[in-house]
Structures are given as C-alpha cells and as structure tokens.
Image (cartoon, rainbow, N blue to C red; front, side):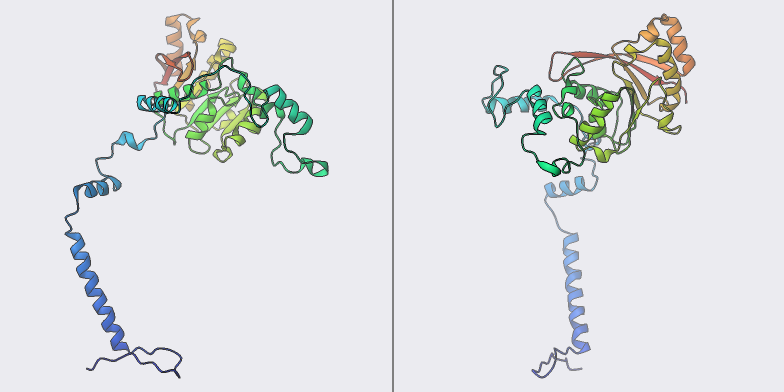
Length: 332
C-alpha cells in the first residue's frame, strides 16, 4: 500500500489528512514513548535523588517527630534569635517615648479615638459607615492586656506547657474554664482545628475583649471557637457528646468556693477522654488539700479521677514560673 500524503490547495478550506497517514503517526509515537519509559525505569539515579524521592513518598527517613508541628522554642531557636540581635548591634535602651509618626501613650491614643475616631478618619454623615465591626477604644489601645498582673506574653508560656504536657495535636479538643480575654486561649485557637476550642467565661468585659478585639484582630474568626458566657460550672451548652483531650483552669479555682469546684469536677469527668485526657489546675489545689490527703484521694477516686503530680514551668521572656497540678480520668 502506498503511503498517503498531506495535500493542500488554496481553494480548499483546510488540510486534508488521509486515515492511513494518521494511524502510522500515532503508532510511531507510541513506540517511542514505550522505549523512553523503559529507559527511565532502569535509570541509575544518584543516591541523593533517590533519598529525596523516598522522603517525599513517606520513606522511613522522615521521623515521626518531624511530622508534628513544633510548639515550643528549641535551644537552637534561642541561639538563632540571640545571634540576630547581636548581628544587628541591638541594645536595650531607656524606656522612654520614642519619636515616630505620631508617638502616643495608651491614654493619649484612647483620647484620640474618643475625640477624632483615630488619626485619619472620615467626616460628616459617612463617618460611621466604614467599619464592619466597630470596636471600643479601650480595646483598641489594648488596656485589657494589663488585667493579669503579669505580662501578656505569659499566655504563650501556658499554652506551650499544657499543649506539650497533654501531647495535643491540631485535632485535639480543649476546654478552658475562665478564658478571660484569651491571653492563653488565642494560642490554642490558632493551633487547633476549627471549633475544637471551648471556653466557659462569666465576665462580660472579658468576653467583649475576646469577641470584639482579639479574635478579629488576630485573624481567628474562621476558627469558630465556642466561647460561652456562664457560671456555676454549668457546661450544658457545650453538648453532652463532646469529649476533651485537655481541660484546664488557670488561676480560676483560687476564686471559687471549694464546694463549687467539686461540683464542676463531677460534671467534667464524663467529658474527659479516659486515661489519655488531662485536667490541669494552676497555682494550688486547696479545694482538695483542705480536706486532708487521705480524704482528698478518696474524693477524687469516687469521681474516677487520679492525681498525677505537681509541675512547674518557666517563662520564656520574663523571670517567672507557674505551678500546675495534673489529673486524669482513671476509669472508662
């Protein structure tokens, strides 16, 4: 059979290709592709490239620890930041108001917001129509960051200690009793999957700080934390089926009657994951120690809780440590 050819004529509307020519072209391309794939399968690739491929396909070289997001800073991290400070020739200077575009104290910023609605602002009828979520001036100047008697940065210390001690992952579920203005909670919300952080808080001003400033300003609205206003250790709004990997109270039980603390613990036991779940209470456990050691242990056992011990952890940025008491659910 003679091979057909491609013909073209100015009077024709296009190129005409005969069927035998098209079939032959496809056959030749298939044969070339076969030999190319065969040569690749027997390629003696460099060992470094092979190692790279193994790692990116779940090879054993990638350690399980490296797969998890690191939470606290390592010694190498600390040395790195110190080197950056030294390399840039930075030194601490007197705590004075620095020059800038418009240097203001918090009190002066607040006055500006009350009087002018900010440095640059709209005038006239449209002055109130350009802010999607208007925020009180007191929150914008972050006065609530001074409500704790210690630096706001301490919230990160608490998060790192609790998250690592409880072996949390982003899929874990956390309940905080008394989250205040989210000094600690912000870090849990950012780390955990959406809707996995819950909190019971009684103070209205703290809740306003959380909802109207902290969550929006930190870009965490999409995490949808469940923060509920309530008191008397009433956890009904969180549902009956949720089970937590971590329940903690930071400096909250100090201000509650011992009887109410025990009521809360009784309600929380069924919401804590058996054996692996943890309850952490900060500062002291007078609600228990006031009963006496033997009676305290007996009361905990009757609830299905086991006391695991006392811990301390140091702050990363200032001379401070906190004390935590650890419990677990000892019965399924």
